[in-house]
Length: 237
Image (cartoon, helix red, strand yellow):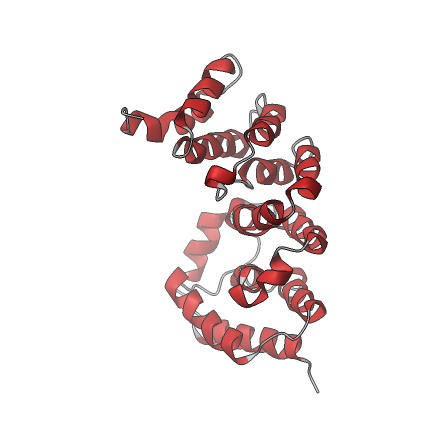
């Protein structure tokens, strides 16, 4: 008899197939420059497709939780299955596993193999970020290590992992994770730097202005524009 993880994965795949839109799918695949095909669901349709299976099948332990995620991730047939894997990983029912230090190798695997913004940004912001906020002493040095990694998306996650931290943001860590990528000419590295600074400018505008000024000779035009975009629209800050 299939275990709960298998039942959940099977039902998720069946639900996604049932909602497939073959007319929309090629455009989604082309937009995302994805080698993996799409079923063609919109974001609200995906949310609805996930809702029933997640409510029906409650994973009983961490092993089943990771087994379901890895099955959808490593044996993906359509890109929406990656989104479903992230949905399981971040689901409120499994928050105690989401935030465990033991989950970081799984997230790292997903980042290295996913290697594109649609999945890596969600993993960084919602998953890696939650572990960092729960275990800052253990994860902070790892994020500094990731910030110097050769893998672009590992570095980008180190930069973006505090997007939801707001007043909990470790300013020194944010600076340390940005600086190794300041000279990177890749669009996604530069965009990630700007995004992280822009988001934190809503919490600490003074710090962000000082950071931009201090690194004016190395910040790309894109990073600078993104960093100051919110502040330029809120001159009172």
